[in-house]
Amino acid sequence: MSSSGFRRSSCRGGSCGARTPAEAHRRRSSSCFPPAPQADHFSLNQPLVSIALRLFLAVDLWLSKRLGVCSCEEAAWGSIRPLVRLVEFSGHAAPWLFGAVYSLLLGDSAEEKEIMLNLTLALLLDLMMVRLLKKMVRRRMPVQNRSDILSTFFVEKYSFPSGHATRAALCARFLMAQLVDTYSMRVLVLGWASLVSLSRLLLARHYVTDVGFGLAMGYCQYGLVERLWVSWDCLQDVLLLKVRESIARAYSQLWSLDWGL
Image: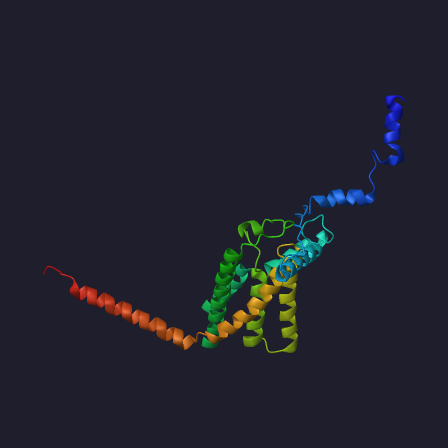
């Protein structure tokens, strides 16, 4: 058989040059979703707790990968990725801290200043606790997570827990307890917190367990803030005491100087 006849027989059926739509779709999406690491095989001789934990983490990995439909522009829902990123930014710490401090400085009444002061302290507490847990757990972010221009300024190496989820739950409970008093506004606040948490999964920023634990953690954090609530009068008394101590210390130092007269 000639070489040309061999080439014709090997390319029979159009399998040599043409690609089916399914193969083309897989090639386009391969750059968006890197291959997941193969799970280690485990035997039934291991402890039941270990088997249950590994199965739970496998389900968490599978579900998180299925929900990451906006992880990049080539993903299934990549067309709505800019809108989801906008929702994600609404739960970032920077706008919340800026708004709380701005309202604190320009507050009209002592009651408004007190609320904004405790909101600022709650946000700082949330940042510290989330940072501490991330350093302790050191869970890597999902492999299909893609960095954006905005996220490059706030680089996150670890995934557990989701800071956006803790902040969303904390701020939602804070607002409903202190500022929101109508049913429609409560529904709006709860919807916002849910969308912010969901955006972390759609963009493949976190695993499902990261977001779930973050929501529970943020909900419990408000209970701690409520117990450690700082009143405006107490703050003024503390600041006034500090000022008096500073003035007295400076006055005593002036008297102890040798003026050489």
